[in-house]
Length: 391
Image 1 (cartoon, rainbow, N blue to C red):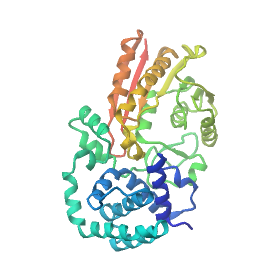
Image 2 (cartoon, rainbow, N blue to C red):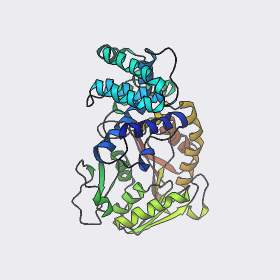
Image 3 (spheres, rainbow, N blue to C red):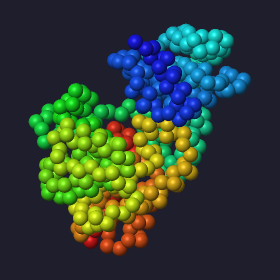
Image 4 (tube, helix red, strand yellow):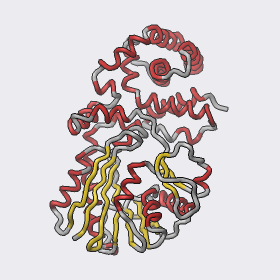
C-alpha cells in the first residue's frame, strides 16, 4: 500500500509544476479508506490554501524553496496550522523523513522551518485575519477584485463558503423503485449508483433542471451535455417519454452519457457530437426546451476545483463570445412558446446576466422569464440560472 503523504506530495508537485488537476491524480493510486481520505484532504487543503501557506513559509526562509521541497513544506505547514488530527511533532518527523528521500541535504532545512512554525503556531493563527484579503482567502488578486467589486456586501461570505465541506447531493431515479429522495443525503450507498437508483447531482444543478420544466413528450436539446446530469434530470421529469438530443464538442465524452442513461434505464436520450457554437439548421424551431449550460470560469465551484482560485480573471474574457454564440443558437432551436435555460457555475456577472441581456437586446421575439444568482454556501455551488421564452 502506498504512503498517503508521499502520494499527496507527488500529486501536489504535479499541480504546482505543470498545472495538473487535484482530482485527477488520485485515480491512479491504490489508496483506499482512511488513507485515501487523508491523501485527498491534504491535496485539496494545500491547493486551496496555497497562497496563505506560501505567505507563512516566506517568513521562515531566505529564498523560495525549489521543487518538491516547497510542496513538502506547504503540506507540513497546512497540517500544523489548519489540521488537528496529526500531532505537530509527527508532522515534522514525517516531513523530515520524506525530505531525506528527496534530498538528504534538505532534511535539516525542512526540520528547521517546520519546528519554527510549530513554536509560533498560536501567533501565526492569530495573525491570519490581518493578512491582505487575497492572501487570507488564498485567491488571485484579480479574482478577489472581481468578486469584491461585483458583490461588495457578500464577498466575504462567498470566499468563506468555498472552504465549507460540500454535502453529497443526489437526484433519485423515479423510474425505479428507489429509497432515495432528491437533495442532501450523506448516507448514500455508492453501490446503488451501479444499480441506477440515483445519480449524484449538486443542488444548484438540480435547480437549473427544475427551472427547465421539462414534461412528457417534449423535445429537449442539451447543447453542452457531458457528463449528462441535466439530460438525466430532464428525462426523469419527462418520465422517460419524449426525445432528448444531448450533444457535446468532445465526442469521446458522449459515452459517459450513454453509460449513465443505460444504468438509469433512460432510453429517450440521443447523443450527437456537435460544436454548440456552430448553428445547426436541422434543429431550428424544433425544441420545446433547450438546456444551455455553457462553458464558464467556474468561480462558483472553487470549493470543488481549488485550482481555479489562482487564475487571472482577465483570461475569462475569452469565454464571453463563446457563451454569447451558444445562447444565440439555443434560442434559434426553440419552438414558439418554448423555453431555454441558460446556466453557469460562476458568479461572474459578465458571464451571466450580461450575456443574457446582451443577447436579448439584439434578438427580437424572446423574453426573459426569470433569472437567479445562487451564491455558494449551505450546500449550494455558486450558479446562475436564466429562463428565456420564445414568443
